[in-house]
Image (tube, rainbow over all chains, first blue to last red; front, side):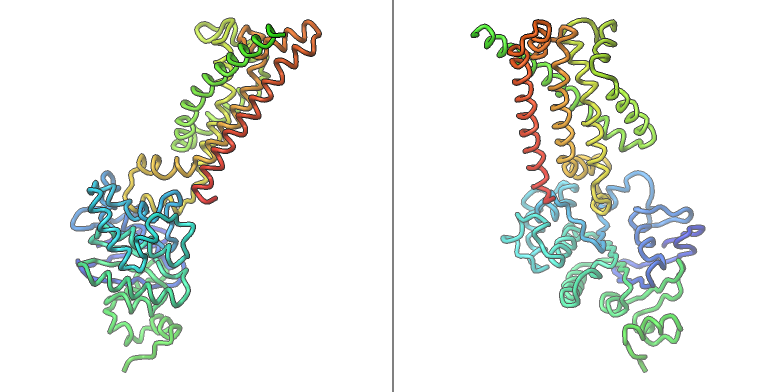
Length: 237
Length: 207
């Protein structure tokens, strides 16, 4: 549950996400999607209201430790340029103190599933990777320690349509493989419908609609229709 | 002539000792000061301003100011080293600040989002990425210190300046050159060495 009011960017947001649920947050640029996501991993602090994850309010001390079980994937992969692909992916497991063998195994397995052959890529530096490859490594870095909560902020929006589609599929497959709670921010309705069962539409920092995906595509709400029309998704009968 | 050669060797060694000792202290103090400046931007600005002002004191005057001071002053090598430390601080501190401030905010945010504490981010992300800039600061500081150290002879600090001052007093340009040429060579060598480190660190980062 998130409650936040009095904030300039998002206000009166109240949202409850059940474990294992996948929720897409859509909205126009500047609607407050990114702010909402930043509130959820403590990168932004609500002026009032609380963010509660697993029954524990997210604030103050121990925030860094708690973030290790929240996977965050941002639009820019922001890989660490001085670290190899493997070292980037190993970031969270190292913070968690995993033994080397386990780190290697988990990294290798996940990178392979994301179509990044470990043997060829592990020792390379991010600058030698394409945008799509970098984002795959970014996804692996966020997911390698199997965080129960995954926050994504338009992770595929900077990629070309084909790579984008590939990555969406790989991402959905990964998500389905574990019992992950997902909050996925995007301005692309088609992408939202592909990754989530529930769609939350925000506008001017407030929730306008919160519907199961099936109801969302049938909705007559004018703003929803505009989103769907823009994505050329015809009204379901 | 072999007397002069022995003198040059001795003075060069002394010069290196003064500069080396000063740089060791300036670096090991300057990097933490730079980090502290980044963490507390308001007092950081004051600190940078003070270090900036030290830099503007003419070197001969700074040596002069130090002479009457107890413990750090007096006549001799200690005063020379203290003055050089004060001069070398600015480039090291400033470049540490610039280097860390120049780290891509998205990369810092990613580190935080992944669960690094401030300290972990500093050690694993900020400092390694600031390394080319920090090496640049050490390079500039060392080159300046090698030059300024020649003036240390005025306060009995020894080094290559001894030869230059004596040469000036005796109107003996051979002697002046005997001090000036090795000093210039040391400066060039330091410039090349730290420049190479700077490039090496930068290349590793792909910038």
